[in-house]
Structure formats: structure tokens, C-alpha cells
Length: 227
Length: 261
Image 1 (cartoon, rainbow over the protein chains, first blue to last red):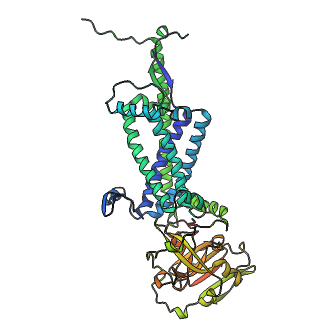
Image 2: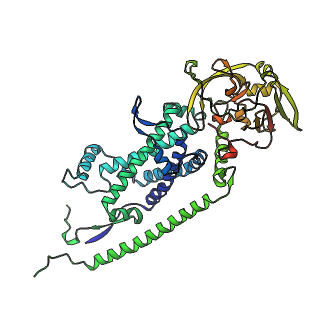
């Protein structure tokens, strides 16, 4: 017998889909700003493994010479990012949704099992609940990253007025680097997230739009009786 | 020949499927309308006329951001200071307003103060007049709007001492703005009075223990860790205290007028 299982509350679906274009605009405008002083790289001494970013990358995305435009967008849309994020966190706290999200004590071990399962190495089925431990860790981390982006962002936006915050984060230049690393984190999250959503299939994707999942439930007659 | 037995859908299952289809239709319709609305909003925004190089709705928000920032700014907010040993020479960045020849000995600062009955007559100051004010030395981090920063040791007179000593603006509410312009008028900067009167805003004549060089703004430049480097105007030729928000070179080219840190 089939039934509808309520999965994502309406508010969370709105927060999620508002955040998507807002974060995209923040990353794009951030890139326009970063271009004007693109000093970060992975490497040592004179050896550079990866430069952030190669010229071809900038040109493909029409990044060069748009610092003013990048700053204008960044310092307008930041308010939407912060408001939406704060509303989401408050809703999660007051609705009790945080219980599904915050990793439990055995989360690390279970998350490892999930990774092994998803890579096809471990065959045993995963525990069935709204979010498995790997999801809990990833989704909790990305919320904390949002907090981190807001804090490091304000630290480089107002390093004199908020000098205490900037100093706490290691100074102006460190705060800028932290802000950049968090953004790389979103890009990485996005790739894994979209791949997993595709893997999980239509029923799961639809639940982020319509809120429910269609599941096979045991028929009432075969339902085990509980003491 | 027998086909493998499949569970036949019960009437209940059909009802559930219908309910799922109904809810999906409604949700995807809402999602579609919301996406179109968002796209429409974006189209509207990016086709607005610009105000000094920035789309006017963005410019409005930037100005509100500046107001919020100014509202919270107090003279007690001090930029961090660093040991003198960390000071370096900043890169030479920006020669706007410095291209005409300069006779340092003949240089004079033209200042138009503001009184209750209106703008005061222009007064002239020599470098010695500025150097007669208490000398203040600070080692702060210069932040370029491009994103780089460097610790520099500066020395000069507090802008607020200059204003008080020579009675250039009797009250901040009479002249909420300051306009600073190079002698050739090719570069100009607008400042809010609160930032101008902050204790770390200097009329600077020495950098890293040496008199300013020409490319760093000799004989007199502005230094303030409350603002990006674009507001640190070099080779100041004239200063005016104004009631209207004055023009600012980079703010006319899409940047935030306030540009406060």
C-alpha cells in the first residue's frame, strides 16, 4: 500500500530555494571582487599547483574589470543572504526540525558507512530516516559555513568599526582568505549535493518542491502489532 | 503461461497516487511562477538606469549601508595599530591628480570653511601651518579597494585639530561633508564629517619616517583607516566644508560614496 510521507516543511523549501539564487549572486559578485586582487593559490615556494583562478576561467565567466559592479551587488544581496539564513536557523530551532539535522554521537562512524555504501563498497542497507549521518554532517556544516561567511564577510567589510571581530578572525588578510575558502567549500558542496540528488532520484527531488515522498507502506493487515 | 504476480493496485493506492499528482501539480506550478517572478525581478533590476555608474536600486542600498555604518561609527572605534617594525612601503597605485608639475615651496592649501551664515571666505595655509599642529604618528593598515592591504607608519596632524585650531566649521551639522581636491582638480574625494573628525584621520606629511614623496602625495595627503585607499587623496590642493554631499571621483564611477571600513 502506498502513502504520502511528509518530508520537508513549506518554510524550509522556501528558504532552500531562495538561498540558491542568492548564494549564486554572492559567489558571482564575490568573484568580480576577488579578481582585482587574485592572490590565492595552492602550492609552495615558486611551485603553483592550482592558481585561483586561471585566466581562461575568468574570461569564460566575463569576470575582468568589474570590481565596482561586484561590490555593489555583493553589498546589496548580502542582506538577503543574511536575512534568509537567520530566518532559516530560527525556524529550524523553533519548529524542532533541528533534531533531524544535528548529528548524533555516532555520526562520524555512520557517515563513513554511508560513504562506503554510496561508493558501492559496503552492501548493507543504510538506516532509514530523514537524513543519514553523512547528510546531517554535510547540512549542519553548510549552515555553519553560512554563519562563517557572514562573520568573515562583515570582518572584511568593516575592519575598523568591527575591529574586534576582525582581530578575532586573525586580522584583515586572514579573514579575507577564510571568506574565500568558505566559498570554495560551497562550490564543492554544490557539486556533491547535485550529484547525490540526481542519484537519489525523482521522488526525493520532488520532496524539496512539493514537500512529500510517495512511499510503500506495509498494508494495515500485515502491520505488526506492537505491545 | 503465467506472468509473475504483481501486487494489484488497490483503490486506496489510486487515491494516494491521485493526491500525489494533485499536490505535485500545485507545487510545481507555484515553483514555476516563483521562478518567473524572480527572473522578472532580475530583468527589471538589471535594466534600471544607472546613478553614477551603479544601477540606481543598488546605489540606494549602498547609500543606506553608508548611513547605517555612519550611525554606528564613534570616535571610540579605533582601527588596530601595529608595531612600527611591521611598516612597509605601499605600492605606488594611482597617479590621478599628480601629473602636473608641483613647486613644493609655492604650494598652499586653500580652505573654505563653513559658518552659520554660509561659506566662509577662502583661507590659505602653508605646510608649516599644518606642521605647527600637534604631530600624531600612527602605524595602521592601509586597505586598497582592490583587496590588498599593507601596514604603513604615518605622521601628520589630526584633521580635527586642524578644523578646531583654525575654526573652519563651527559645528558638524552646519557642514556635514568635506570636499578635498587636488591642485589640478583631476582627483577629488568626498568625506562625511564624522569620519573627517575621527582621531585617526590625519592630514599626513610623513610616511615611514620620511617626508612624503611625490608619488605618495607630497606635500600633504589624507590618511584615514576608516576608509579605503581611494579616499586617501594625495597632494591636497583645496578643502571645502559643504552642506551638500560633494562629488567623489570613484563614486562617480560605480563605487560606494561612503566606502567606509
